[in-house]
Length: 125
Image (spheres, rainbow, N blue to C red):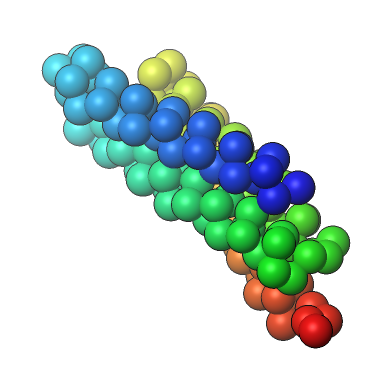
């Protein structure tokens, strides 16, 4: 699992950088300030949780267990739901997509709690 989460985190970080550049250069003149801010929020949180996936990969080697693995999948789900919904909202203008965003936030919160729990409860030699 450590290699998978490290790979997913690295790819997610790369995508976040590409989307950040796309937003700064291609979308700046095309989107109103509120939609551009939503897009940038998606990028910022995606990059943060890409780094979180790298931490999960490391935690899988140090404190393996189901809660640590669950945290990784919750970070992936959170990125798809939170950042993905903000990207879709920004590019389409469909405001109802904003209703999906909090589900991603909840997934991220659960991911952080699972990571803390998994590390706290881990049996180390």
